[in-house]
Length: 405
Image (cartoon, rainbow, N blue to C red; front, side, top):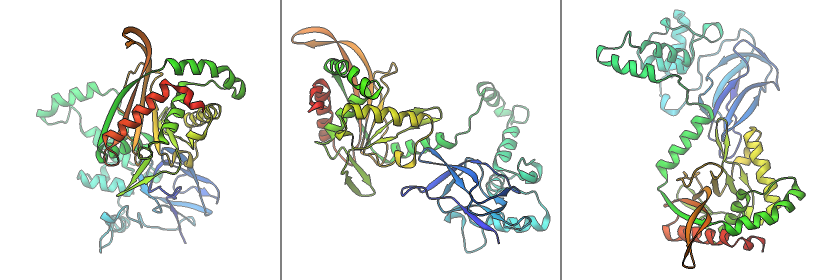
């Protein structure tokens, strides 16, 4: 009897997973323990093993599709064994008291010997009133995938067959679009979460400037000692992380998370550090930052950032953050407005250190100034407590000896 392959639940907060790559095709033999696909969750890839030995009979979802956890995504069984096109509809919306459309169509298909196609390909073809018989499938045994339907649709919209009124527009699009990049995988996850954050959370951003003279002096003093101890160079990122961690002790509402209609005050200060990745942005979490010395913090931040860039993070390293720091100071960016990493309450954007003229004791002098931008969720905190946190953070960075106490 055919056995189901489910979308695994790889963490307490995981609700969906995105199929990044199938490593087997329909008809392939698999052995229990073989890696059969890669799944993305929380912006990292996880390899999924087969729990049964047999033949991959049916793959129900294509690469790039997002699937709820515990959903059937494939079947493994004996060679030649028959299974339906989809015995598990994607969502409750597609489910009625009658048979799902995909199952009814699968039965019709078996009777009429119609083209073989995935459920998502059938759905897209129905939406555009296209007969599957005119589409060539690229899947096993000519099976039509969603991307085959998309390719067919793309070929139908061109200057040669567009309505007269649309010819000029089609020409402009054809000449302007040198390359089209499918929004999927990590890029889609990031896009969806940023859209969710910006739509759900009323963002307010406060800006301030820090005189980094004393922080630069402290870094110069500690640099050789930390490098001798860890083999790594202390950067301003670690000094900023430490200052944020220490300041958050006095401002627990900024270190909170909003879960449904409850504000959860976090017992620990676990700061996410935004790290650029070739395919997007990752935010690994450093635990209990306020309790770490600058040497240990340097070691942890450098190690976890490198793991992020190499795609070697574990799921728990991307979960449980209570506050995020996004530092673009290595670029020529003065300030920017960061988007909150829900369900966290706030995120700090850090710009470059740049000499600017400032007034000091009645004189105009050049000082190394750095812009800080604090975006916060106005559902959780108001402007005054957020401003108090930012003010104290600026004071801590301008008097960084407090970090050593």
